[in-house]
Image 1 (cartoon, rainbow over the protein chains, first blue to last red):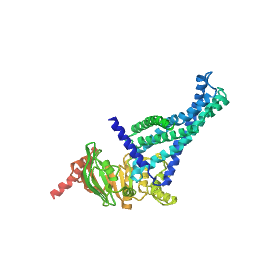
Image 2 (image 1 turned 60 degrees about the vertical axis):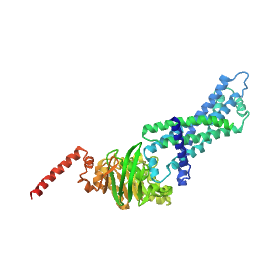
Image 3 (image 1 turned 90 degrees about the horizontal axis):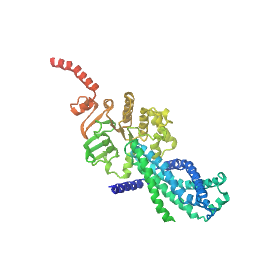
Image 4 (image 1 turned 180 degrees about the vertical axis):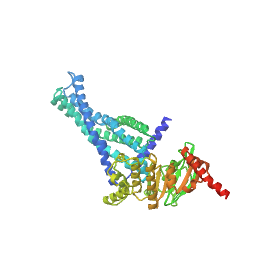
Length: 248
Length: 264
C-alpha cells in the first residue's frame, strides 16, 4: 500500500514537472516572477546563510584547535579541516538542509494558500498554465541563486575561522592560512556547487508539489509545509550520498 | 449559449450529478440554486473545466468543451471570466495589478492601454479610488467588485459566479447582483451564477435551475418560481420560518379575493 502511494506520488510529481517545464506564455511576466523569486528565495536567504556559516566555520576551527589537536598533528590542520568541511559538505548539503526548512516551507505554504483560496483555480480558468507560471520561476530562481549562496557560505565559514584567530586568539592567522591553502582541489568547490544546484531543484520542486496539491484548509497547508520540509530533507540526504559517490 | 447534455459525475462511487441536461442563454443571468451538497459547485466546476464529468457534453456555442484540443481550450478560457466565492484575488498584487493581470498575460496592447482598460473596469465597478490598494485592505464587497472587474477585463463571453454573495450583507449583495446583471446585459454574456441566496433569485433570476441531490428538479424564471407547485423547490425557497409566515400571510391576503371571485 505504501509503495503504491509512493509510486502514485512520484507519477503526480512527474506530471506536475511536465506541466512546469514548458515555454512560458509571456516571457515578460515570467521574468518578472523570476526576479521576484530570486529576491524572495535567494537574496532574502543570504542573511541566514552568512550567520550560520560564520559560526559553524568558527566552531569547526575551535573544535579542531582545542579538542582534537595534539602534539603529533600539524598546526595547519584546523584551517585545512575547516576549508574541507565547508567546501565538501556544510556549504552545499547542510546549508541546503537548513534552506529546505526556510525556503521549502515558504514555497509550500505560499502555493498551498493560493490553492485553498482558489487563486490557482483563477489562473487555470484564465487559461494560464498555473504550474508553469508559479513553479518554474521558483525552481529556476533558487537554482540560479544557490551557487552564490554556496560561495557566501564558504566565505563566511572562512571568515568565522579567522575570527577565532583574530578575536578569540585561538591559534594564529598564518597557521590558518597555511591550512586553508594546503592541498587545495578546485574540483571540491565545483562539486559543492553541483550538489547544491541539485538540492536546490529538490527543495523547490518537492515543496511546490506539496503546496500545489493541497486540498482543504489551513491545517492541510500546515501539513503540506511540514511534508515539504521532511520530504526534501530526506531526498537531499539520499541524493547527497549518491552524488558524493558519483562526483568524488 | 452553453448547453449541458447528460452531465454525470461521481466521487468514490457516490453519484453527485445524475445526468443533468439544460441550456444557459446569452444575455441572461442563469442561476443554479439548491441546498448545500446538491451538486451546484461540482456542476459549475464541470462547466468551467476545473473537473471533468464522467459522462456528458458541455457545449459552448455548439463546440464540445471536452473534445477541444489544448489550444482550443486555452482560447475558450480566455473568453471566460469567473468570480470565485472567496474572490480569489492575488494577494501579493494591488487591485489595479489584479485587474491588469489577464491583460498583461494575453493582450498585446501597450502598458498605457492595458492600464487604461483596467482603470475603466475598476471605474465600472466603482473601485477606481481603490486601484492602489492591496486586496486585504478592501472590504468583502469591494473584493467581490474587484474580482468582477478582473473577470470582465478581457471582455469575456461567458461569466461564471460561484456564490457571489456569500459573506456579504443583504444591501451589498444587491449591489453585486445588480452589477452582474447590468454587465451581463451590456456585454451580452452568458452568465451562470451558483447561489442559494433567495434575494438574488428574486432579483436577477431570469433562468433558474433548481438542483436536488444532483438532479435538475425544476427550471423556470423568477416569475414562475413563486407559483411553482414543486414541493422540494417550495421546501427550499420557504425554508425559514420568516418566509413560511410571509407565504402564509400572502395566501391569507389572497384568500378573500378568491372567495369574492367565487361569490361573484
